Amino acid sequence: MRLPALLAFIFSLVLAAPMAGWAEAPAPQAKLPTVTLTIGDKTLAAEVADDPAEMETGMMMRTKMADGEGMVFVLGSPQKASFWMQNTLIPLSIAYVNASGLILEIHDLKPKDETPVESNFDTISYAIEVPQGWFLRNGILPGTVVRGLPTAPAGR
Image 1 (cartoon, rainbow, N blue to C red):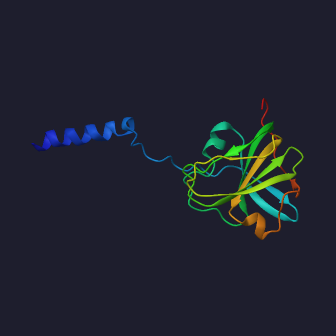
Image 2: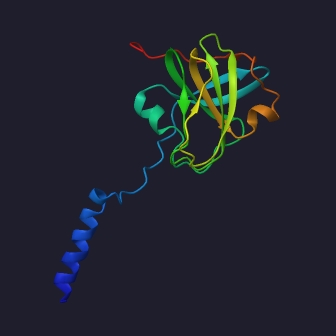
Image 3: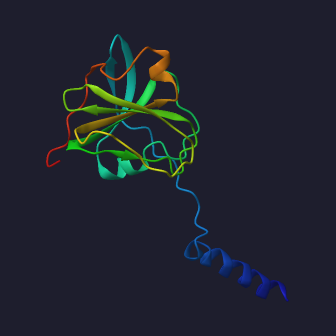
């Protein structure tokens, strides 16, 4: 095969790759605006994911989360929550929180595990993700109150 024909063939493979399911992994989302949450007597700098695209991307493809940092997902009206770890590379813990700021459940999540982790309650308005074990290391258990939670955007 001559060089121009070979280059054309390689170029056609590159163009066809996304259509064949060979698309690149998504890029991590840029750091979101943060709020300071007070959880019991501890503080957490939490990025706020409050629109569908931000919530869908979450912590995907990020390679680190510092101790004392997290992400709060503003779900809006109370509901049964479900999160998974598709394309999430770091181990996390998640707290499911009701509209009053009461932590109802805490679960550990495994990197890249696509098994949904559903809440046991249908009254979840927030989910807070932190480095795995942060809640336990800080003595935060179900029944702890979270203060400083953001409100849902209008219309949700």
